[in-house]
Image 1 (cartoon, helix red, strand yellow):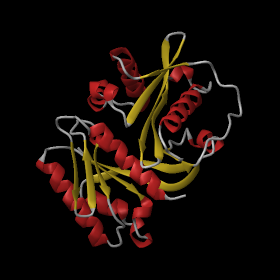
Image 2: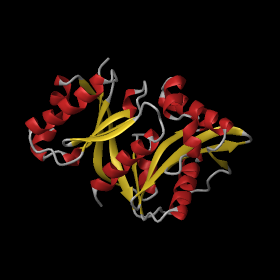
Image 3: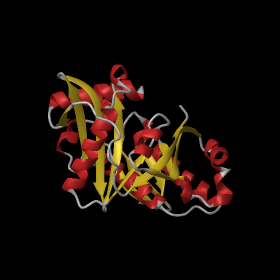
Length: 261
């Protein structure tokens, strides 16, 4: 299993979300890819290394190019990197170098991969799955995401605007119990890989299997509707044991450094 699947799908998910947004940009700079939604939430104005970074000077070159780009557009931004894009000798220097460019670590997530899902080890709850294709499902997707990821609803709505209901490469789902939205998930499919994103469960419905149920539905649908033969994700600490039970194994670490206000 390779970290390349995680890194490539992550970058593609940003490109899919950027598609059609008036302030978005997807460009290649020397050694760094930009996939920016042009939004307030800096995590979605992203820069990614596009090749192995072997020296501090090479890392600084990439950060300089990204910072200059985002500064010219007056946007806060984030540097997303799978640690395997860094030569071993430069990894321990990453946080210090990023700090000199006005970035601090905001997320450290295991990047995980699986070729197939294991069968559930428990009976999952009944849940009605709706693809986000209407104003109501979009509102419910935004509201749950804002609550669970502790992000202002206005920021979340900028990222997931009405265009997401017509998006074929980034598919969002909401799960309902007795008519109430209880969980979300999304998938991004590209180059034979399905990526899992935006898994969230309403606080009062957690630890009941709703997150696993919608995750399995979203992934099963993506695998059925595409030619993908591998699944990737970035896990939170809370989701790690569940994803291991489902058949995922860590293949890298995904680090996110965000610009300091």
